[in-house]
Amino acid sequence: MNEERSIKQMTDALPNFRNLGVTLRLLLIANAFALLAAILQADDWPDIAPRMMQIATLFMPILLGSMITVWFSMSWLGKLSYWQGVLVVNILVGLFTLSSYFFGGELIRPSVFADHSFYVARGVLLSAVMCSLILMYFRLRAKVLSRSLDDARLQVLRARIRPHFLYNTINAVLGIVRTQPRQAETALEDMADLFRMAMADERDMVPVYQEIQLCKQYLALEQLRMGERLRVLWQVQDVPQDALIPPLLLQPLLENAVYHGIEPLINGGCIHVQLRLTGSNLTIKVNNPCPQRSDVPPHAGNKIALQNIRERLDLLFDAEASYQVASGEDHYLVEITLPYMKEPMT
Image (cartoon, rainbow, N blue to C red):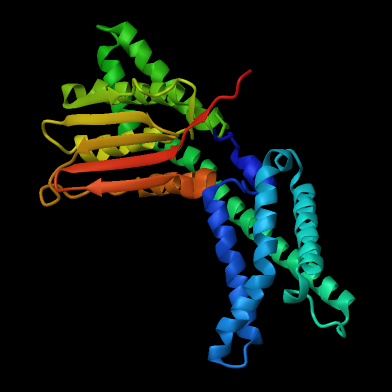
């Protein structure tokens, strides 16, 4: 079961070494360093391959041993501050470097006439430098992508006060305030909840039912002005109520479906929203009709919000999440797959 880790924790602590994407990046970066070292040491092009094999023989046991150790120690490492974690990981890598040197035999150790203290010090120093550079890369990457959460709230807030949305909603409320005061009151409460969610909720993961409720409030406001032209089919009965998803993940997809798909159509259409649990993954699908590309010029905007979703998924789940879009002449489908995370037991 995946543990919830906030974006703030990700920028102020070590990367999640149990994440598949982090593991792949570690292997790629380490092998890139090895290839660079082989190129620098080689005398000619044919000499690169044997140099690479020699270097891989030295660093692979250190790399794999360190990765396995931090994988099992992740629960404990996650409780440390960032710099304490960096120190512990460097110590672990240094210990594996020393172990490889002393137990690697003639395959690793230099000749008996060499200065062993120099080789040991150089190996430990190079391991520490490589380890620190890799950890620095993950920290910088997390800091860059962490801006996506603030951008998401800003984009949703801007969407909520988008002139046509705000004007039409208020106008629709004024049109029913005398004849249907209760419905008008509900619409104003829904609008207040949308503002509150965009500005006040600073959590990085929220219960899925909360996100669904927010989306239903948003769609109720849109249906107030669009009437029967906007229909929504929900298929969420198979989703556990304790499942967690990033906030404001589903709402921008529905807004995109309404604004770019349903609104330009004369007769409107139906948005299909499906959430289901498949094994250890949660799948979200939003499918909506859209006008023929040749009939109606496309609306501008909301590409930033959708790009923001991709960046947040990349930050929170790396390679364990996916974002796919399938578009045809008259339909648009967005499918998101992310690990199933649940609320911790209290």
